Length: 173
Length: 189
Image 1: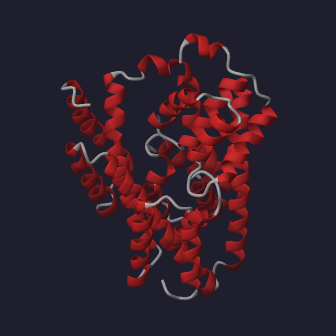
Image 2: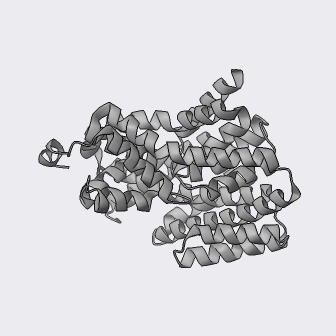
Image 3: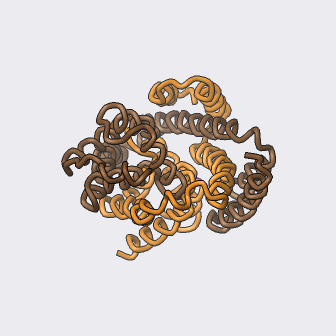
C-alpha cells in the first residue's frame, strides 16, 4: 500500500512538469525510479522502455510498465492514473476558457519557451536509456543509423524495432 | 471556436467514443497523434481540421500525455463527463492490455540471455528513434538561435548533473519564457 501511495504521489507530481509528454519525462522517471526510490535497476528500466516501444499505443505506456514492475497490476493502474489524471482534470476545466487566453503574449511565450527545454529533455532521455541498456560500440552505431534514417524519412518505426530485435538476437548489438 | 460552432458538436454515444479511441490507441507505435487526426477529422468527422487544431493547441500547451488530454477534450465535447472518461479509457485500455501481456512474457522469460539480447537491440532502436525525434524538434527551432543554449543547458542539468526535473523546468520556463516574451514584443514572431 505504501508503495502504491508513493507511486501515485511521485507520478502525479511529475505530470505537472511533463511538458512534451511522457517522452520528455524519461530522464526524470529514470532518476526517480532507479536512483531515488531504487525500485529497479537501470537495465530493467531500459528493457521496459524497449517493451513500451514494441507495443502499440500512446507514449505514456512506459509509465504503465514501470508501475507494473514496481507493484504488479495495481501498480500499473496506479502509475497510469497518476500520470494522466491531474492534467485530464485541468484540460477538462480549461476547455471552455482556452479561447480567452489562446494567443495572449504570455501564452505564446510559454509555448515557445518550453520547446527547447523539451528538446533537451528528449536528448537526455535518449542518452540515459542508451547508457542503461549497456550498449557497446556496435549498439551505439546502430542507434546512429536508426537516428539518421528516421530523422530524414518517415517510415514505420516497427521496421527499426524489428531490425533492433533481430540484430540483438544475432548478438550484433 | 466561435459560439456558433460550439453549440452544435454532434452527440456521439459513449460506446462510439470508447471504441473510436481504442482504434486510435491501437493504431500507432511510439505515439498515436497522426492517427488521432486521421480518425477524428477524416474518418469519423467528429471534428473539422480547424477544430482539431484548436483542441490540440490546448492539449499541447498543458503538460501531461497530449493524446490523453486530447481524448478528454474530445470526449467532453461530444459526451460530457462520461464521454471524457469513455474516450480516455478507450484510448488506454487496449494498449495497456497489450503492454501488460508483453510484461507477463518479460516476467516469465526476461532473464534468458536471448531475451536480454533482443531487448537490448529493441532499446537501441528506441534510442535511435528518440534522437531522431529530438533532432527534428531541434530543426523546428533552429531559426531562433536565442533558444539553442537552453537545449544544451537542459542536457547538462538533466543528463550529466542529474538535477531534479521540477526545479530545472521551473527555472527553464522562467528564463526561456522571458526570452520568448522579449522576442514576441519585438515582433520577432
